[in-house]
Length: 212
Length: 212
DNA sequence: GGACATAAGCTAACGCCCGTAAGTTTAGGA
DNA sequence: TCCTAAACTTACGGGCGTTAGCTTATGTCC
Image: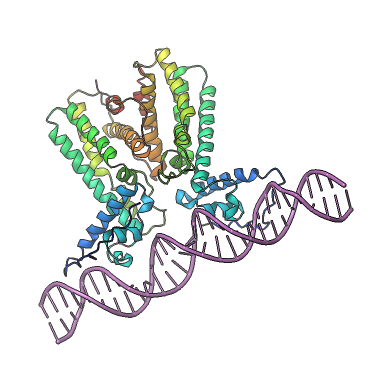
């Protein structure tokens, strides 16, 4: 267990007007703890403060409570995921089928590369209960929409090009596709080793996108 | 928050030779806490003891530590799930397609009915880390196999009857099907309300089982 | 039917980490 | 110089897991 970072140099105080920088450092510290510890329970208010090299109460000017830190981490990583997916789609060229696979595989790769992050993003554990006033329902509902929209788009392109058997409900089809991806991504993020064939991802995509 | 059960009647001690009964009561208490609290973090060694109406140290003769309690709960619920799936299949009659849908929907219903239980069964959070000596890898790997075998069987029956396009890899197909079910089940167990069409479950089953 | 061995469970206590409140220090900039 | 943003120190109360040792009821055997 490597908890003691203990910067010998205590930490340079931010300049006036740059106090907000600490906010990002706190998020980064929480993310680092998550990646190392492999468990969201390792991310406590105090452990984050230790990791960031600050005193625990110094967090309060930036975050109302620990769940708020988690929300910030999740929001940041959702944006990162969106960027990854967008870039994967853009780099895949014009072919709709290739773009679909690129986006879906980028999604799966993200989960494989950052299992702990994926778990807090979609595992639904960091919301302690209904009674956390610092986090609104709107915060939660708006979380994945941008990334999901990307998926809807690439799937829609496949339908339009006649590559995929689209039903009349593109949104529903995209939900089903995402659920399949999520099932695999989540399971990989949870267990040490997934049984099953190596190409199970491609199988899911092919089946759920109704590719011809 | 209703934590105080506080049996006014403190609790009748078990008769000689029936000390093992407490083990089941502890599991039941943990399960109750899980269902009520909606969060596995509510299931601590002490809270379980309170719920069961015993002193905290009285757990130790029955369980090595808190993760062991969780493992027992998960094992019990896996058995319960297996039973549910088996009964659903048996009650569905001889038609292979009907049996497949019955088993799959029973799976989804279980998750919908007991979201918290589903989360600890498949959410992978209750294993604190690699260093829990009281739980072996064999414990973890053997967990879902029986229920999964049921799924393999009903899917295989569909292939044999020519209802489904089976590949040469039945196991792999079953894994893919389960991953889709799991994605939906897990998501339902995590978020308050799932967007998407109501029949998304049937869509997943139809697509992933390659039904004709 | 009373002694007594022992299974079943309890009380007390230790040390740890947690979240958070109150008041204080320090350094950047006008 | 001195204001004040930025961050610190100290401290409180509480929950946790776990250890050590004690109590009490139950079934047995004389």
